[in-house]
Length: 284
Picture 1 (cartoon, rainbow, N blue to C red):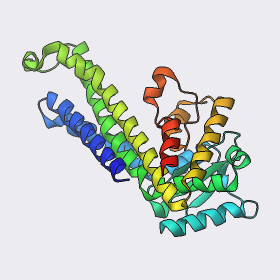
Picture 2: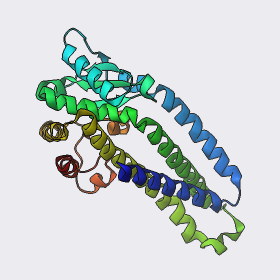
Picture 3: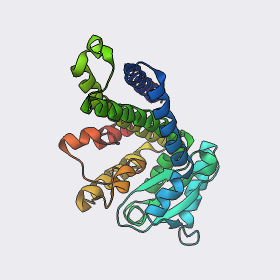
């Protein structure tokens, strides 16, 4: 667990370094401060209201306590093990077998399960999935994701400013001393891509952490490994496609990446390779 926490801190530090490097290219703090304030405002709104937006976007309904009393009992037991408050439970009426957690802290958390996941998983496997999602809440992964998104957005904003300055012949007079046009193009094009890849790597490291801490909460890592195998198989079989950019943007919330991704697209996946996740759980 310490290794995954350290990896997240290292990646956030690298992202911070990229931000400072790109900001320093402009020779003054004005552009950097403006971009930072802009990103903070957007992510402040996202941090406090993303749970309501995501739940509404997927048509989530409160999970029926009479019909799914066993789910409530599982979550109550796991919350007791994790020493955290009970989250709100939601039902998403889709055949996609998946689950996700959202909420800025344990006191304002929601865990959603789909019809598909309730249909295909055994109870002990579902318990492993729920422990994973509760771990995301306990580890405050929404906060970590928001910080990473803020820095990546600022880098993208500054790169856009630089691209426009290159198009219209602007830029710093001493740009020749800093690598000239080639250096500016490098920053404008490659830095946002690097920031996005680091952001994705942070998301993947948090998935590993949630797998590990979820297995500890449930005391049953093999149940989660079995669940992941079934969920991956279901995703490959049904091959769901995102209906909007919003669904693509929120795919990182789910325990299993819900859409088909192969080849170069796997580099941009927010989830680690399933084989590695299952292997780590079995080693536990």
